[in-house]
Image 1 (cartoon, helix red, strand yellow):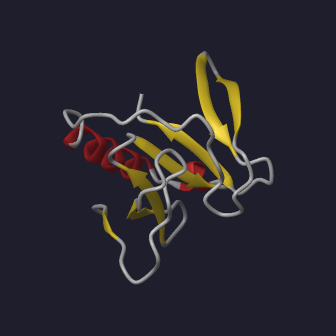
Image 2: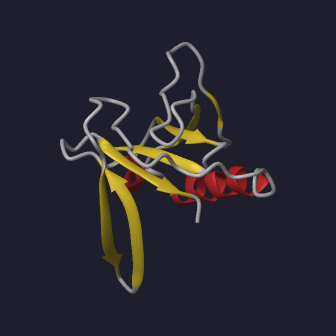
Length: 119
């Protein structure tokens, strides 16, 4: 399934710059689809809780392709104070380790999701 912009709902405000994020639809593991919110200005992705784990392998490749299409666009730095687009709580900078990969992202303390940059 190729990603496409989702319409019909209010765009999520980017925690990094407060601008409207694009909602892209991807295939979900087992069946169906899910929407991932992307900010091309900040080069950031908002994953609702468990969303990243629900992407099919081909959906991950499709997401990487979309990111690659925007690789040369100027990157706006994230704001100093980031807030959850769902509940407005201050996001918590989190350092994690998945296998041997170090990860850094900002997560909602109430479990609504996480903001991660493309790099």
